[in-house]
Image (cartoon, rainbow, N blue to C red):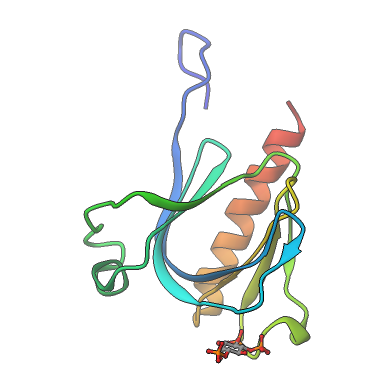
Length: 132
Ligand code: I3P
């Protein structure tokens, strides 16, 4: 977003609770998948997954949890996003996000409508950065 003074300002694009797991860390495939429900924020071209918390899973959008430190921050510049192939997870509605540094994350929500809005928002975030 551009302010009246012509300065680019950070805006909160989207926030909510998603299931996510990291599968590759800078090119190195992780041995185990640890899915967790976590508060997730998309802002200024960065996707931040906060630490797992029961409060974040239960509170949803109505009651954001007291934010702990971020667990993963993903710079969307140079990232790519797709629907995860079936062999990546037995879960439904799974997105696969690959960052430019060679890390991969799976992102999931039981609601197809909700995961679709995230697909759109993250995809647009990636697009905007590639236009810079
Ligand atoms: C994994 C766990 C994951 C599952 C994964 C299992 O077992 O059940 O939820 O991924 O399947 O290996 P564990 O808890 O013993 O580590 P999905 O839920 O995404 O299917 P995978 O081995 O096929 O990746």
